[in-house]
Length: 293
Ligand code: AVI
Image (cartoon, rainbow, N blue to C red; front, side, top):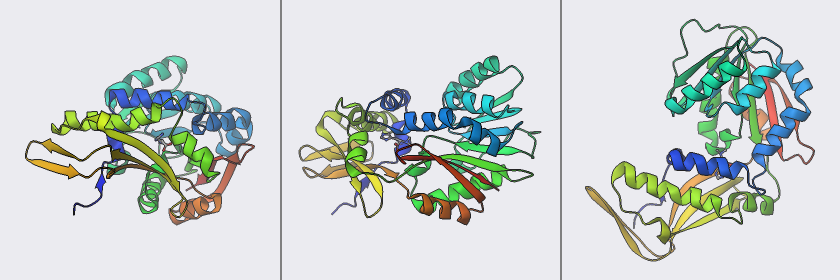
């Protein structure tokens, strides 16, 4: 018996995977991105007051910096540090941010927040705000999420340090199911693309067409799970190894945790944050949470 096969969700994001994820964020079924934007647009004045002005914004996983532009404008940020694994892509995005906000000292740092990051020398220690939008915290198991939040606490530590984080909340299973298994099949393509990426990385011979996308809400763990299920028995080979799969056997590719707000507040407190304040959309599907170090 083989152990349950797993691929880390970080392998979703090659060039094609990042494009597919962008397409997911525009799908009618995928509510998190537009809900978060609506909260920031509709309740921006209150959020801006809680955060305060002239902030040093640090954004792990900054990507295109589209959200950073809104936030930096809102809080009249003095400094911005975007952190992303894809350093080249980030450099371009940060350059556009500098053009849009000429007074902003904006820097790009290549790196993975889970591995710890080196901030630019001379970055002010006071008034740091770690910005972690997009509900990416949901892609970590709770113990990993706690560790990550502790790391963010360390990054923001100093006078008036704070965190602003997007959290996807628990809701009707049918809404979640549709968000992760859309009618147009974009999420299915995103899920299968991880195999193409892996083929390139390790020289394996996965045939993505032989794998079915599956997504479902596991109420016990309060998470959406994504899997790839073998359409038929098959053997996948790579230099120095092979793995046989029975028909319907699954590879677990992603978890996306959906929090109850009080549980998330507890996690924040365990990571050392205090005075949390949350802004929700009118359906109570999503929260933007601000907390102090
Ligand atoms: C990046 N992350 C927050 C997305 C999510 O909703 O968990 C990734 C994703 N997976 C499938 N659709 C979107």
